Picture 1 (cartoon, rainbow, N blue to C red):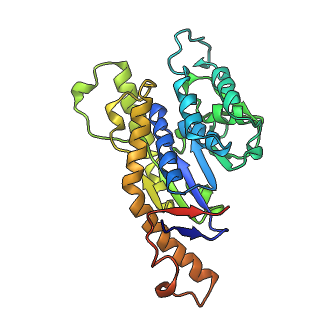
Picture 2 (picture 1 turned 90 degrees about the vertical axis):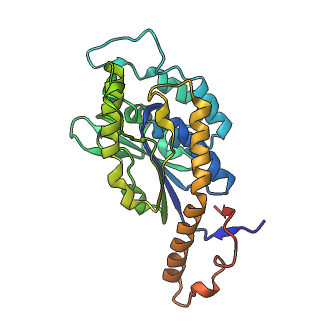
Length: 296
């Protein structure tokens, strides 16, 4: 099969949004991209996306990611230890990550992972690129009230989605082509759906996350938006297969447009590199982009 070869210094970035259990769909997105040879050089993760980013950055396989999810009891724990700052302590997630990620610090990961978290003291969104993986991810996932705030390198953090749910601009300093994955999915709902505390909480969280995700779209070259996630509860961890498949098949649907956008970006990239480059004679225009391989 014919393949397009990317220049060695042409870097791909991927930013993975938060979205509670909908973030499981990121695994399906990574699976589809990997099958077509698209291996992002840098992954930025926020909240649930931070878990996927670190697993990917550590070199975990798709089956490893699936095992991480299927054994995760973080949101289904019945014995919640109530404190003045939140219901769930960070130790469960931190211990779970240490079972699957054989690295201690973010800067040690084979592939660069950037983590988004909200600084509770300054009120600003911070990008975490160094320090312990366990506290960085726990900080990014620390949904206020549900989780206790996390101390990471001397600052106190809560969920990254509170301030920015799918950061893309930080990737522009590292990457030539940026793919976003937005798993929030907002759709109109009739008032009859708001029949209790949980449904109202999920709805307000979705609205809030949507508004902190959309402003990142212009900084992305393409945004994948898995459709159908909202049929399930935002904190439902029993739908692993459905969530992964939704992300996987949406990415397969989007791949022709992703590859076309990448081809256009590559042409601009090559033209900047060489003033004699001509789109009429480039190696990309004559090769079917049904498969894409990157050389590291």
